[in-house]
Amino acid sequence: MSGIGFLGAGTILLRGEVVKGLTTAASLWAVAAIGLAVGSGLYVAGIATTAILLAILAGLKSLQERYHNRLRVQPLRVLAETGTITFNTLQEIAGQHTSRIRQFIVQPAADPGQDEILISFARLSRQSVTELAQALRARPGVASVENVEGPL
Image: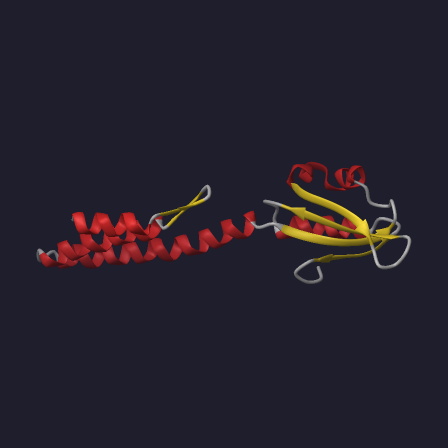
């Protein structure tokens, strides 16, 4: 068991403030326990535990992906007449989502008289970002709103 503990500890990594590898370490311990059960002749317990472990790991994967997608930063690029979109205007449009604005950068666009505005939202659902993009499009003077990764 000390060898399994050593392997499990080796899979846990700290990168900045993010801990990775906990699920892998726990899985190593669970597989070791299943191996001990089967080696002791407890076949039914080993098979049942394997089924439970697989169900939990498969379920956790989809929950983890949903959680990470929700935390992902979602950037919008807005092309508007100069001075049309200010941070105060964005706060009015965003309403309760104002605290989710991570970045607001205004720079002159290639066309004179227009601004290119990069707005990044953190921890906001894709649907909410789409709604905010539609609200920005509805403002007079806004030429285009698109997701940096592709059009919304």
